[in-house]
Length: 160
Image (cartoon, rainbow, N blue to C red; front, side, top):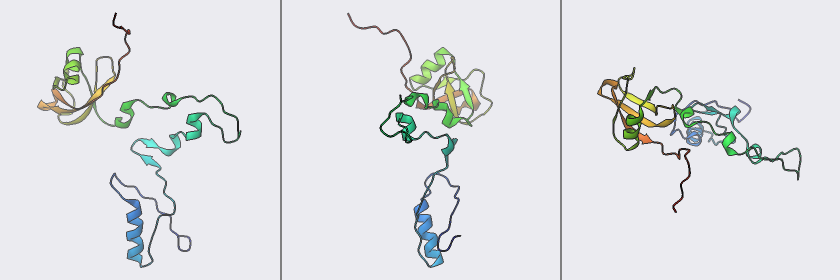
């Protein structure tokens, strides 16, 4: 507390309206309430201290006005897709299983997953994440929930 201001640290899940919470708190106290400053310190496994500023991303340096250094580029800062699901169990599919999964069909998990049910990260035989699946049949099959479609590196063949 600092006079008529209060600093709150709120740990919440998605769908929490912090501005409404401030208004409701103010109404309960009989003085009204509003948000003066709102900082999101963490979302899932991603923390503010690891964030990249717009100036860093575009290569601008605030201490050197008018001078622009080479931007490192967006891709040097992008984490792999599985980073957001790091706490989830994963399964790996062989070639035919990965192909079936990629076409929206349930695939055999060999060996069966340690978990018997729930959502899992699904990887192909090379380790690349190909989607999110839901275990079924006591962990021996996985059905696609979200399939990640990404261009795979390959030789470029142009029509004649």
